[in-house]
Picture 1 (cartoon, rainbow, N blue to C red):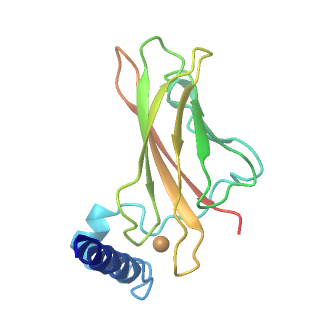
Picture 2: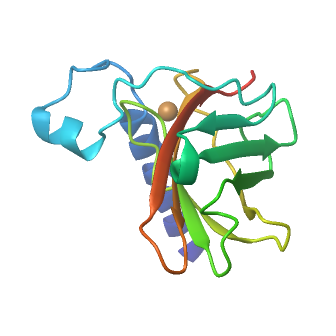
Amino acid sequence: MKNIIVAAAVAGLVAVALIACDHGAGPGGGASSAAAAVPDQTARVDCAISAGPCAKGSGDAALTLEITPRPVRSMTDLVFVVGGPAAATAGAAGVIDLTMPGMFMGKNEVQLRPDGAGHLTGKGVMVRCPSGHLTWSAATTVKPAGGAPVTGTFTFDLSP
Ligand SMILES: [Cu+2]
């Protein structure tokens, strides 16, 4: 009996996820409050993540993001490596907030820790979108031990 209840609950969650993943509204089609909650709703792909590392910003605000293994696919255990001056500072930490532009796929954060070689690294998975869309944004925040956070958003298509 317990198992039946759990299965029903899981089926309900999946149904909700499928509805949440519907791209029907399209970019800009949502209410203004939704746009505020998803600031990169109209983000364009600016990073060929399956080809190699991507870079953002300059000087002290420079960030690089590399995801392996390549090509980068959904439903795969991935390693995220973030570099740049802020990431290389002693005691730095960071987080990557993974989203699909214009839709809610559930909270998906990758916590970043120093790898001892001047980068921050963490592990994560991007789920397969039932709509077939492959575009994700990685809003990356690096927090140096003694300075202001450095942020950058990388938008890329997963490989099919
Ligand atoms: Cu999706």
